Length: 479
Image (cartoon, rainbow, N blue to C red; front, side, top):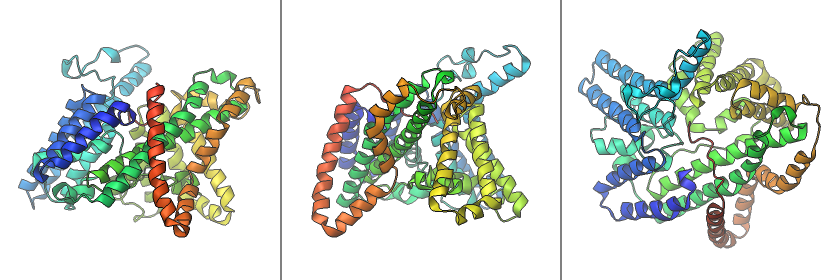
């Protein structure tokens, strides 16, 4: 993960911020554009051309759409071209190999050799390598043309300003998904205050700590468990492994989102919140209102509501939910695991909409939370395993399918990861936030000085960890 490397923290980021602060206002978007391209090229030097192409498509579509102001058909054609081109990029790079592999499977022979296929016969653009964050920046860029067509935003005629929006490096590769309407005004005029910078620094360090100190620490357990034979896992080790992944993906992704929001504030932007303690949810519907909030808002605004939302009767609502959740699963990845993962949540949310939600409201909160977390954890099995047979084998191990309740490996993992599990459980709730608010009301000066000291200590710990450890995965990097 580029964000959590010493080179980024102590070379790239300070350099960009210094140039950004000393530059005249009219050049700040140029700095954003150049730093965004440099940042993306650092992690994915070849596929920066894909991001530039997506940006150019939507910028030009916006100009043509504006030229035909008041004429519905030409504007609609521009919108369709924009959507088809962006979805086409996703289809080629993210889903192309998956589609070809399934064609081979249906045909019973290797009609296509995915590893030997290159885009437009260009050897440097193989379609079996996924451009980092392509799902994020294409959705972000598409939001502009869709909102422009709907009349929600004004055309952006300055190519530098529009490109700066797409290449905003704090959230370019993994969200939150910032729609053009979210930052349109700030792209033109934004103010940077000491309070905003201070708040941004705190959010960035907290996010970095969540990623480096918590996600990486608990993630090493999942790496160890998932590397073994699922058919030989004990029940305890299987549960410890998937619980480790459950915490890892939350602190990994929410940590990145916190860093992105914090860096946005340091640069004068207000990005939308992406997480709201999802593991405290009392239903699957509530979980998805709290998890990856910007993705849910994108699908709701541009797919669910245009399909009719819940305004056209129960049958249509069920259909609309099924469509949205099928697309949600596919958006996350090109495999049948993700398709089934999205379908699972679609079915659960539909059932909660039909009758299950009313039953949950009558049950004690603790039962609702157990119900929600159990299903979320089972969903993460689908999400984290490479294929459906592996997912099935892992779930079987969780429920005693291997006939081994506990073994030495499980006891070793339990003892060695007990403390970090406790940290994870507390950290994914609002207990720390409520404790700080309580103490601030009793002794605000202690919190103010304590916060600064805590941030410095956490930054030093993160630096030490990054220097001494090579284990630094980022789970959402390729979505």
